[in-house]
Image 1 (spheres, protein in one colour):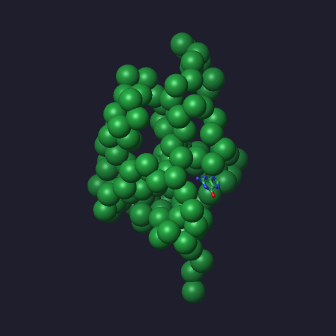
Image 2 (image 1 turned 180 degrees about the horizontal axis):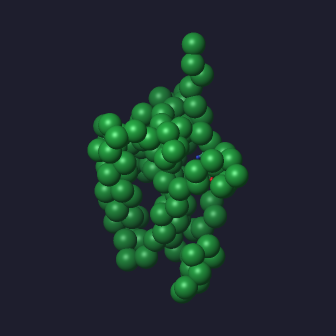
Amino acid sequence: MTTKTLFSRIIDRELPADILYEDDVCVAIKDIHPQAPVHVLIIPRKPIVNLSHAEPGDQAILGHLMLAAGEVARQLGVADAFRIMINNGQNAGQTVFHLHLHLLANKRFAEQGLFD
Ligand code: 5GP
């Protein structure tokens, strides 16, 4: 028996979350510990562990996540300026092992810095 990920439990409504967007491939929720005024997680329904575990057959899902990020950004009124981030692996800061895009916005990002 495999254990469901935290995000699968949220997607299946077993745990609460602020769901901002969903379609048949992915769900977008507000991050519980936001790092910016807008901090949304875009999560595929398929519990891919992370990018390193994605397979060629996941190509459509990965592309879909990008398009969904653009759609969520438009819906939230931040389409002109946002950042997308993926933490891959524990040493890169991944804490939930179910692939997700971080969408961050309404923060004054450094003009040239990648990380601030
Ligand atoms: P990671 O560190 O894996 O890249 O990102 C995991 C993200 O999930 C973190 O930003 C963390 O705040 C968020 N998170 C962890 N647990 C929950 C939860 O129960 N609900 C929501 N909405 N976000 C969560």
